[in-house]
Image 1 (cartoon, helix red, strand yellow):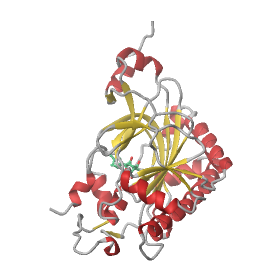
Image 2 (image 1 turned 180 degrees about the horizontal axis):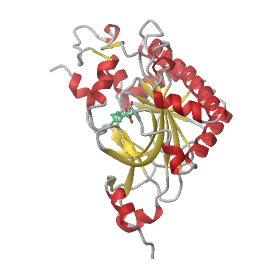
Image 3 (image 1 turned 90 degrees about the horizontal axis):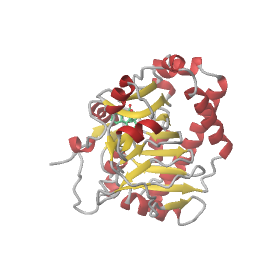
Image 4 (image 1 turned 90 degrees about the vertical axis):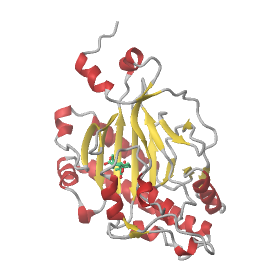
Length: 333
Ligand code: GA4
């Protein structure tokens, strides 16, 4: 018999569950960055799903593996050590609590700001306290993410037939780009799942859309990530530790006047394997005005969204719950 202490159970019962079979979805679009058709495939995937897998991306595997090992070393430390880099402000180390408004998940994470101009005290603390190896692994990885996002965003503009080519990529390349980086650790949860949940899955990271322009995710070889299809069905993404998964964020949905879809996604906790994911969220500078690009508005097409600055959107996002539809605040009547 497995005995679960009441405090552990209470903490765990605050986290949502869902009933979900985990057969893998075979329809995730795969974009080969070395294929001349990549731009067309990216546009199609962003319109239909807001999500695709990137292969032949040119990111050296040892950068990825190295960072994953450093992250695991961090997460394997005693709780009291990890807590020194928290609580998140929103940057820093967090456990179970996601954001400031009561969302909970079966997760621990490190959230870092990647813009040196507005580096938060927590990110600074993290970099000072942790090994030089971890710091340099993060920096190398992020610079590869920037390079890859630049390529993907230029292909998007090309594929949409709009100019200049850097219309999206310049937002991330700007030295004031407000991008961030998240390393998530989803510990396995064997006993609790079996006893208390009757076959339901524990939510690792609840359903949400990403507020930024694009997000690039890499995980170890564990299942858990799910995306929501246009008809509202949740499907499981087959893991692939050598590829990256790209999400359209809310800001890109606005810039394209709804042509590209910001994809709703979530992560389910596993029962036996620990999941580690690293996500680069490419955001614009805080002062950047976000509105549908005039070059994308055909004839009398009306703008679906009111203009806002990225600062305003972020402020609104941090007042919302994870699952809220944040874009609805900025839709035209
Ligand atoms: C979701 C995407 C990114 O992980 C994130 C998250 C942020 C946070 O964890 O601090 C938010 C969430 C995310 C959207 C709504 C707000 C803000 C938690 C939350 C409840 C870093 C981001 O940019 O927005």
